[in-house]
Amino acid sequence: MLKLIIGEYRCRFLIVFKQNRNRILWYFFWSYVYYMLIMRLDVVKYTIGMVPLLAGFWLSRMYPNELSKMLFLCPLSKADRVRYLWTAYGLRVGVSAGLYFVISLPVVLSGSISWHQYRWLTLAVVSFILGANMHHSFLSLSIARTKGDKDYRISFVYGLLSLSSQICVWYIMTAFAFPSYGLEIQNGRKIWIAVVLIELLINLEICAICYKPVIRNGMHYESCRMIGTTQKNVQTERNAGS
Amino acid sequence: MIKFEKVSKQIGSFALQDISFTLPGGYLMGLIGENGAGKTSLLHLILGLYMPDDGDIRISGNSYDDAECEIRNQTGFVLLDQELFLANATLLNNGDLFGRYYTAYNREKLLDYCGQFSLDSGRRWKTLSKGEKLKFQFAFALAHEPKLLVLDEPTANFDPEFRKQFLHIVTEFISSGERSVILATHQTKELDQIADYILFLHQGRLVFSTEKETLTDCLRLVQGDAYQVNLLKQSRVICKEVKSYAASALVRHCAGERYDSRLTVNVPTIEEIMYYLMKSGKLDRESAGRDVRC
Image (tube, one colour):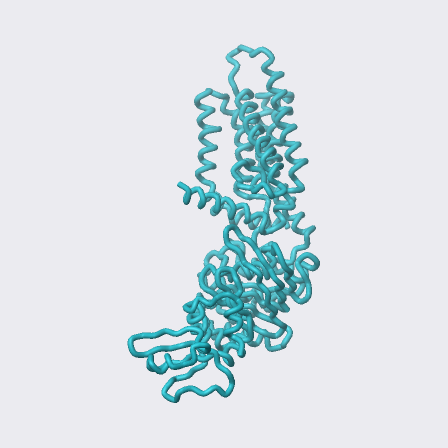
């Protein structure tokens, strides 16, 4: 199964990258380059967290929780389909988290950041990667779901939570890499840890509540494709209206 | 083999409505209709990609709710989708990768068909032309020995030589009497040669689904001078096309019916039937059903 997924991801990489290129570049410049330059953030500290976060975020956009059309047509059992979705999820999380550990461990071992900070940073980064890869194509404010859709409410509410998680993680990384200039903000460390905990709770909540509807949606060809159809229709209607 | 009972499906703003038909084992059904009539959507319902909003679909007596794996195991397909297989993998790797989910997948058979269709099994999927991709899909479908073949407009992209070979293989495929084919196409000449049943869709509605023989028995295309065609009994005329001097008409025909000797009377082709029915505007099931019955 893993071999098949790696093969699929490798084959589709350029196509999906081109489809998402503008969004990827926008996120990269806005959240990485721009903030690092404008706020004069510590390059190493900011990079070890932000690059894996962005990798996790991009992977979730490029490879949604769904089977390819060919796999829908093959005689896969329901258990096989669930296994495929979980393996693919594990691969995306594994790649992003692996990248985080590969680039962050040498920095910690060199003593640039303390183990205490590293523990909290790891919680923030890994939980965000887990949450982001769970919800894409299911939780989104931009996905036009009808009120009759049984996932309508859960998609909307958890879409808001997902957005809050992105804001939290941006704050966590900015505050983490912000140079102190020898000064210490009052309760700065406590606030930072509190935000990490909030972000952790949000993403654990997203994973716990959404995995069943995400798997249910990912297992049916229509559920994955109809969302696109609805979006197109909404767009067509808007265009016709304007 | 395939049984649709009052199946309806809403897909965005398009809807397939109240589709009922039966295709027994050992026959080939041609699926015809204008662009956007719902042919591909109907095939998606047969393939279990879409689930019906209303009605019941049975493939070999099973429904997708009860025996999805079994149905998929026995169904081969050729679809217009260009990205079905892995782009960077070779044809053989693709075959092995997806073939292992089919109980009857036979690697040697796939290689044999690739050879017959002049496909190099070591080539990557992305390097194939459109026609070659369809040929490989066809080879893959045959390699897992399905009981039902679902073909979505494959022939338009085949060269004339391969088209003949394709028709020959399809005819052989159903000859055992246990396997069936449903073929959506605009190349109706092929259906004239090989189809046993014809299903005509128009704007998501079933116009008719009947044996081809019934069509050829019950309809005639009458051509001649305009005044002679005008003399035909109006109740028999389904649609008439009058030009400056000549005219032609699709008419209901009964065995033993006589025509003016100055008229040319032929069995209409499926394309002609489709053309005249669309021109007549009698595309609701009741009028068309009445027209294509003796």
